[in-house]
Image: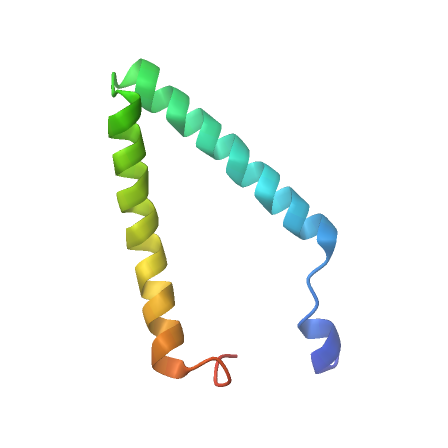
Length: 71
C-alpha cells in the first residue's frame, strides 16, 4: 500500500464509530442516573471532567509535535 491509501478513512467507519460512541454515552448516562443515583448535573460535570482528562493529553501532544510533524 502507498501513503495515499493509508491516510484514507472511509465514511462507513466514521459512521459506525459515532453510532457506537452515542450508544455507549446513552448507556452510561442511564447507569449513572438510575443505578448509581447521580443527578443530571452531577453526570454532566463528571462527563466534562472525563472529556477534559481524555482530550488534554491529545492536545498537548499535538502542540508539542506540531501539526506537520505528526504521523
